[in-house]
Length: 168
View 1 (cartoon, rainbow, N blue to C red):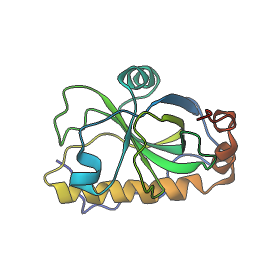
View 2 (view 1 turned 135 degrees about the horizontal axis):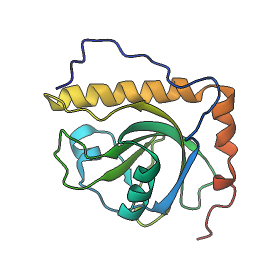
View 3 (view 1 turned 60 degrees about the vertical axis):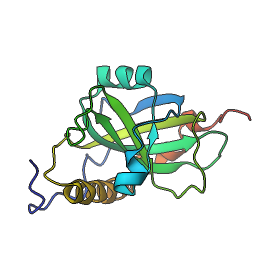
C-alpha cells in the first residue's frame, strides 16, 4: 500500500525528451469502467484495448504525461495517462485511461483520441483508500503540468499527430 506522507518530486524527466519517447497513440474513445468521473471526480477518456496492448509493448505499466487532442477539435491539451491494471480496483485487463487537462462540457465517446506520450511519472500503486488514490492522481497532474512546461516538451503540442484532425 502507498504511503502518501512521503513527498514526491514535482518534476520528472530530463530537460530533453529521451527514448522510448515520444510514443504516439490513437484510437476511438470507448466506454470504460465509469469510475473516473463518478468515484474520483477526474474524468478519463479510455483508449481501445488494441491500442493499450500496443502501448504496453513499448512502455511499462504506470502513469505518464504528454499532450492529447480529441475529435475534430484544433486545441491540444496536456494529459496524464494511467496505463495498466489499476491495482486499487483490481482490474482483470489492461486499460489506458487518459485524463485531459481541460474541462469538457460533454463526453466524446466514439471520437478519435490522439495522444503523444512524453514522459513517465511513476509506477502503478495500490492504495489503502480512495482518498489516497485521489491525492496521488492530483500530484500526478501537478507533476505533468510542471514537466510539460519545458520548451522541448511544449514543442510537441504542435506535433504532426495533431495537425490533421479528422473531419466530422
